[in-house]
Amino acid sequence: METNVPKRRDNKKSLRVKVISLGNAEVGKSCIIKRYCEKRFVPKYLATIGIDYGVTKVQVRDREIKVNIFDMAGHPFFYEVRNEFYKDSQGVLLVYDVGLRESFDALDSWLGEMKQEMGSQANMDSIVFVVCANKVDLTKRRVVDEGEGRLWAESRGFHYFETSAQSGEGINEMFQVYTSTHAFFSSITDMCENGGKRPVSEVSVGFTKEQADTIRRIRNSKDSWDMLGVKPGATREEVNKAYRKLAVLLHPDKCVAPGSEDAFKAVVNARTSLLKNIK
Ligand code: GTP
Ligand code: MG
Image 1: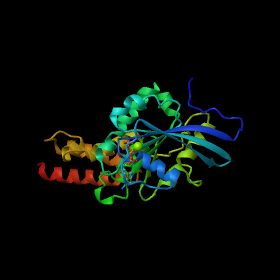
Image 2: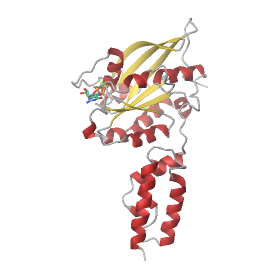
Image 3: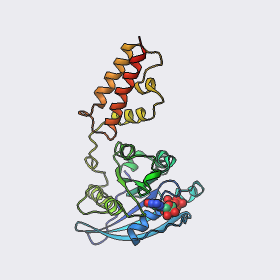
Image 4: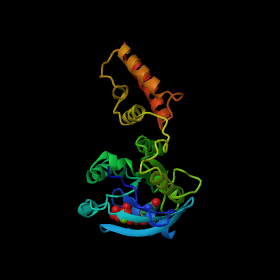
């Protein structure tokens, strides 16, 4: 079977890895990389043309890691250039702008584009994904909150970090903090040492996909009927039955998924308001 395990060089302790950055244009991919590698921030937007390539060396435990970074252009225009570069990656930075919902919603299509180029899910499983909720310094324009972003990431087994390339917040923690086993480079190293398989326990989610999907559905529901998953005009029994099912799934004592407490409260309120109007 084809895996993404990189070739070790002569020195047993050194590794070469390839990482790529993905996400809509202007979300801050290049700035995040620049902040980490060059410790600086450029406020002026300079769109990446096709791909930017850079190399950095990092130390993870007793290993020297040579990281080849392929910083992709987010603009759809560069699809033809990008699609050459997905293969053989060990790490992916998936970036969105917390002030632009469409950049968050686009994460699924970025994964889709990558999967198409990788050929199979098996190849996607031997890659470490880190989601960067970027531009958290711009608090007033934020529209995607931490719970929503974390839920999307962790329900897929991806790491989640809040970052600002402008202030530097979260950048070192995300790439490499020696004490954090969740950091990007240490996770990639762990994966390589584990024969190219993402260690199962790496992101200990502690909640089910059903819980994550239900919270997402509740957040996006258009009214109380929709939230409880019953037809408008449903009976008291139907409302109570739907409520009990959701309460068991989302009760804060049972569910640790990000956003479960708010979802639970919303469900309680939806039931109360519906029952008020049903004879
Ligand atoms: P493409 O290369 O076109 O795909 O864009 P990109 O994702 O690489 O975006 P880039 O890093 O070039 O940043 C886009 C714009 O957002 C620039 O004007 C940056 O200065 C700004 N920017 C990036 N990160 C941050 C951040 O954390 N906070 C703020 N306030 N601005 C940021
Ligand atoms: Mg760029």
